[in-house]
Image 1 (tube, rainbow, N blue to C red):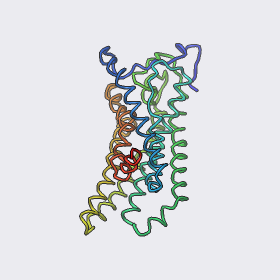
Image 2 (cartoon, rainbow, N blue to C red):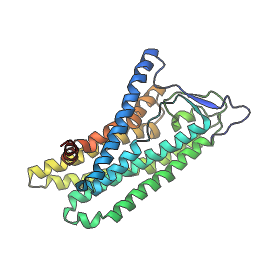
Image 3 (cartoon, rainbow, N blue to C red):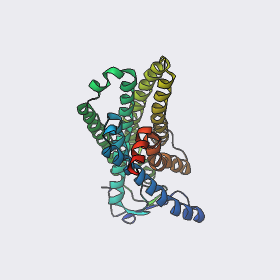
Image 4 (cartoon, rainbow, N blue to C red):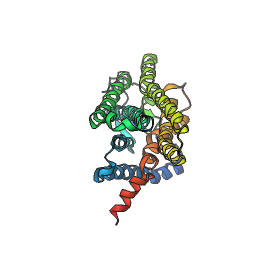
Amino acid sequence: MMRQTNQTQGTEFLLLGLSDDQHTQQLLFVLFPGVYLVTVLGNLLLMFLVQIDSQLHTPMYFFLCNLSLTDLSLLSRKKVISFTRCAAQLLLFLIFGCTQCAHLAVMSYDRYVAICNTLHYPSIMTWRVCVQLAVGSWTSGILVSEVGSTFTQRLPYRGSNNIAHFFCEAPALLILASTDTRTSEIAIFFMGIVILLIPVSLILVSYGHIIVTVVRMKSAAGRLKAFSTCGSHLMGAIFFYGSAIVTYMTPKASKEQEKLVSVFYAVVTPMLNPLIYSLRNKDVKGTLLGIFH
């Protein structure tokens, strides 16, 4: 829990949102509920389709369900938030965000095995292995997020309680701390190395092997199918990792730039993931159309 002392001003944080302009705030007030609804319905629909169609009971869709579960956590519209709830929001956001980082790396490994070791795919990606990888992703997400959360919450906040952001995110909170934050910033930077750069490296290695394998394929249809499936995953990974790395591992940008970048991985990516990964997939579309026939 974030400390409160006799010098602490109030018992709440005020989330200033994306803009101070009244007209922009009115537009966002109308837009954000729609974004939230699309995100929730899209991810729930994907999870539902995977559950009802046995043909989708494969490792790839198992990991996509886990990814959808993390996406459902990343939106909040409340502007006035207590210290305790802000701390809880920070921790939960980090858990789901860090877990998503691990899941994206696991999904790249799944595609690597499926394309580069096709004949051995069923024996390598067994359900036991899939469950172990999913549990490992959640465990690593929880452990790493504890670092960022702890080093942010341990700081005293005795000055302004106005957070220049639309949710309780570590970089935005560090600006309000009334003490030196270098130790916390270093800890969060190393958190980024573990949960951002290492998974990105694994993804790059996996896709390096995938590209070499696909280029060597004799079938044009096979190359097209492989690039279509992997292209969707790579697009989602670029959106998410790119914006997260800019926020947590680069020199401090302006507050407006930080908020804009955060919108990509906290709002846009969770909304687009069902479309990017699966709803454009013919198997998923076939299952969806089958419901209405």
